[in-house]
Structures are given as structure tokens and as C-alpha cells.
Amino acid sequence: MGVRSAPQEMMIVLLMCLGVSAVAGRPCDFYTSLNFLNCSSRGLFFVPAENPHFNDSQGIDLSHNSIEKITGGEFSKSSGLKYLDLSYNNITDLGSKAFRGLDNLVTLNFSGNYVHLSSDVITPELFEPLVSLEEIRIQEIVPMTTSKWKGVDAAFGKLENLRRFIAYNNFGNCRGPMLKGLDNLTEIDLSGIRCSRMSRDFFLHLRKLKKLSLSNSHGLDFSSSSLTYFDLLDTLESIDLSGNKITELHPRLFQDNRNLMKINLANNKLNRLPKALFQIAQLKKLDLSANAFTYLQSDEMALIDGWITRARIQDPFSLILARNPIQCTCDTVLFIRWIVLRKINLDHPDNYTCLLSNGSQLAIYKFRRDMRNFEVNCVSSTYIIISVVAISTSLILILSLAGMYRYRLNLRYWLYTRLKPPKDMFSGVEYVFNAFVAYTHEDREWVKQQLRPKLELHEDPFKLCIHDRDFLPGRPIHENIVDNIRQSRKVLLIISTHFLDSTYGPLEIEYAGMKCLDEGRDDIIVCVLMEEIPVRQMPRALRNLWHKITFLKWNFDPEHQAIFWGRLSDALR
Image (cartoon, rainbow, N blue to C red):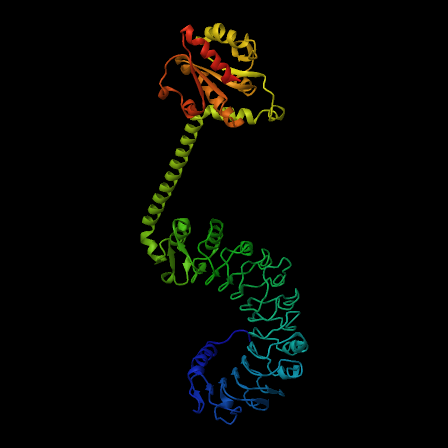
């Protein structure tokens, strides 16, 4: 009894069309070629069993009327009836013999009525005549709760040939097992189910199930780490989880569904392929419409490539991405190229649009002829960005190196003083020397013959740091300079052309200036000008301190030297 004949299928399709357009108040229409009686939307309050065609029809549509009860006997002479639609009436009363005589009925639609699906109403005796029933629809009746369902599944268990069970928006609790006895069910629709979790044994008896719909549920969780919803459904081929506000699926949700071929995840909130899909080796159709995808990542495209390769030529893989905010930018160029060149079988490819970087929209199919230009523009943009970044980085590096070279002495001084051991960095150190004397080799005789006798052999002698005498041998020169300047109260610069042109003269000037900054004193540096040198020829570090420095000019005339030595002594105190 499992497969409908072609006339039955045609009759059902015609019913769906005519049932909507029938005009209330008109008598029932009988279609001889189909043996079909259409009484939909006729304002009926009872089953029209007196109609001359009633008992001879193979299909009867009584939907959208005001029938309130079926007590039994109305169909007792309708043994040839295969299709019966009682949907959307006001039926509240079903007698235990209501379906007597319908032993050849294949499809029953009882949706949208007011019968409480409880064991008080749905008794095993009610369904006993329906030995040939393959499909039952009980959508949008009073929602089922667990307490009301107890005993009802035993009644449905009488329907041994039932294949399709459509109960949209009826289940109110998900503690199983449910539908015991319906071991031959191949399709079940529990869309609109009203619970957050289902027990592991909910589908315990449905070991032949091939198609399952759980769309538009009221809070059903598909991401929990303890999910085992579908592990018993090893024959499942198609599942509909659309409209569930899903952002992620548990990675092992489908690990036991090796025969799964079609998955509907439309109208959710996904922006990446769920890891659960990576457990599926072969898939024929994936509906991702109306989600939040802007593009697919490389591993996601590789997964779909595998499905495409394994699909048969006569039944290719189909991907539905309609109504997603797909972006066509240089960041997504690989994805767009993949869609165009991989020839993905989209549902309606001409209707796919994507958002460009300028905010406008463009049909994806146009990339089939513009793809090359699009890629060239992106490559050009990429090279421009890389070039700008490279040039900027190089410029920054060059400027940094130039700055480091320009202020290399400052940097060396800063590093040396900051990296000194803590014991040498305390403030308030007692000075060892009254003055550090900075001079060049050419002025050494003047220091030896003139400066030292006048200052160190004075009745109130100064203690001078003379590098020929006081520098520690074996140490780097710059370390000797830094340490001795730090240990000297003042710095005496013997300025001459030779000094300014020497290797260490500018270094000693820099360190002397830094000592002024470190100690916060302006009277540290004293300069003796051995010759006339224009200020503009002085090093920048010296010019910057010009207004803070005491300058004395050496005069070779003995008459003026007494004044010079007096002023120098005063400046060094």
C-alpha cells in the first residue's frame, strides 16, 4: 500500500487548487475523470452523505466548512474513498466509529480543528478501520502535551501502514518515546514544536525515518554539548531546521546520520558553515537562504567542492544562498570567482545579487563576463596597498635610522646612563672633580703648561679631570667621558678649531649639554675660546646652549691673562 498511483497524485494536486478557489454557497462539484467530490468552503454544518456521488468518490474535500462532529456512519458506505480532507472545520466531537468504512483510505487531513488529541478522544478503536492509511495531517490542532499524549500514541500505533505524519505546531513537550508503533514512518513534520530540548528516546521507534522537519520551533536548542537528538535516525536522508534562529550547530549533531542528503537551514542567523556539516561526506542539497552569509571561507568552499565531486551528473549538488548579504569586494574575490567558475548549481542564479564596496548592488551572473576585469582591478588595488605600505614602512625606517644617526650620541648617552647598574644611578652623588676639562691633542701643551699650574697649584686649588692623567686605561673612551663628566661639578670646554674637528670634541659637548638637563643647572658649562670662531660654525648642541654658557677668551698678551685666570676661577667655583 506504500506508493500512490498517478491518478491519486493528480487528484490531490487538483484538490489543493480547487479547494482554495471554490465559492461558498454552491453545491459540491464532482469531477468524473478523477472520481473526486469537492465540497470545500460550502458552509456545510454536516457531512453531506446524501450527495449522490458521496459513496462513489475516491476523493472528498470537506475543508473550510463548519462541520462540528462526526459520530460514525457518515462514511460507512465509502469503502472506495482514498483521500479525505476534513481540515479547518469546527469539529470537536469524534465518535469512536467516526472512520468506519474507510478501510481503503490512504490520506487523511484533519488539520485546524478543535479536537483535543487526548486518550479520551483518540482511542485505538477510532483508527482501527484505517488499515490502508499512509498519510495523516493533524496540523494546528490544540497543542499536544505529554500528559494528553499518553495513550494516544497507542491509538496511532494501529496505523501500521502509516508513512507520513504531519503535525505542525502540535507538540508541546518533547519527552519520548513518541509515536510508538509507527515503526514504518518515513516522513514526519513536527514544525513549530514547543520545547527547548528533546529526550534522546524521542525518535526511538522511528528507525525507518527518511525525512524530518523541525522548522520554526519555539526555542529548540541545536548547539548544546549533550545533543543526541538524531543519533538513532541512521536512515535519515532529509532534515529541515529552518526558521530556528540558529547561530551554530553542535559539531556532532549529524555524526550518526550517514545517509543525510538534504539539509534546510534557511531563515536562521548563520554567517559561517556549522562544523556539524563537516561530518557529512556526501550531500545533494544545502539551503542556506535568508541567513547572514557575506561569503564562504576557503575550507567551506573546499567542503562543498567535495560534495559536488561526489554527486552524480544527473543529480548535481544544489546550493541555495538567496537573500544573504553577499559581498562582491576584493576581500571576497575568491568566493565570487568560485561561484562563477565552479558553476555552483544555485536555485535561481539570475536572482542573486551582491553588495559592492561602493554600496551598489550587482547581479552575480554578470561576473561571468566581468570576472577578469574584477580580478584585475582587485590585483591592482592590492598592489597599490602593498606598495603604499612598503613605501611607508621604508620611509619610516629611513627616518628612524636617520634620526638615530643624527642623535646617536644622545642615544648612546641615554642607553649608557639608563643601563648603568643601580648603584651608580643614585642622585646627590658627591663630585670627585671641580671640573672636567675637554680638550684636543693639539691643545694639550696649553692645558699642561698654563691651565693646570694656574688652577691646581693655586692657594685654593681646583681638582681637575684631565683625560691624559685621569682616564682609566682599558675602558672605552665614551664610558670614561660619561663617568668623569658625571663625577665633575662643571665642564670646562677648551674650544679651538682642532677641538671642533676632533672625534670626541662634539661628543664631550653633547654629554655636557645632557648633564645640564639631567642636573637641572645652567652654570655647568664654561668655555675657553682659544681663537676667534664664528658662532654659526659652532656645533648645534653648543649653539643651543649659547645663552647659558660662560665664555672666556684666551689672550696671549700677559697683561690680560691675570684677569682671565681670575674670571675662570670664579666661573669654576
